[in-house]
Length: 129
Image 1 (tube, rainbow, N blue to C red):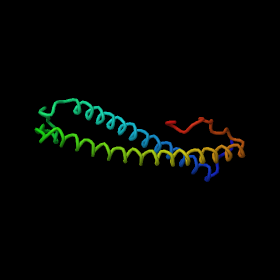
Image 2 (cartoon, rainbow, N blue to C red):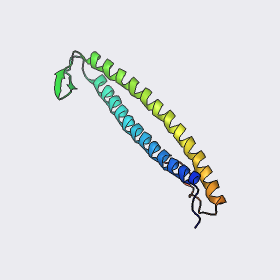
Image 3 (cartoon, rainbow, N blue to C red):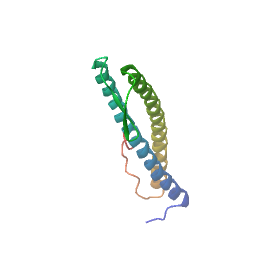
Image 4 (cartoon, rainbow, N blue to C red):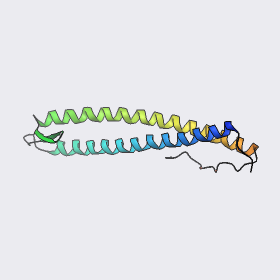
């Protein structure tokens, strides 16, 4: 088998690093999506609760009585907005990484085909698609 050129070896290393970065972004996005869904469920349930309900919120390792239902709702809604912005940022990162992933995969396949080495199997999609 032919030895790979340093350029192709470098591209393979970049490809593997890109796969790891993409997986990390997808994991973060998955976790934030789960947190956002939990916030939405909390908001729904809190909306159904009577106005005079006693609500406790977690602050570190303490449970503290909240001032009012409205203050808790407002805080959760602000947290939801922040989470949505973070998720959109991760989605942009994911798209960028997937685009780079595809380009690098194509480059590697061309380089490996030209060198008569076995091409990288086409995954059809980047990880997480």
